[in-house]
Length: 107
Image (cartoon, rainbow, N blue to C red; front, side, top):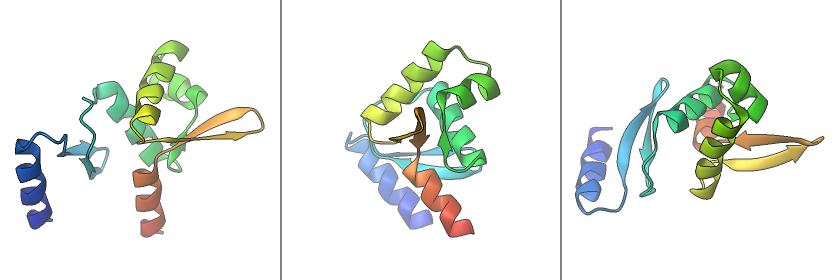
């Protein structure tokens, strides 16, 4: 872990968007230059606490957000490739591969 943190810190100084952020109980390496705010972190934490995915209704109910706020935050995560969208019976599920893979490794 120490070597990885040092490498990410060196990459960060070069300006590529690489950094380590704490999401829930885990640390993730972020490699997108987009600035993630607390809304994005809360959605990823919600996914981590669940099955590795969320719906807009999950976000609205659990975080007490408006639909617009939830959709804006999820849209950026989709745009940056940090989430995948899956439609099932007319419901959009947003999967977070880094969270999902971590959950699979723990089982």
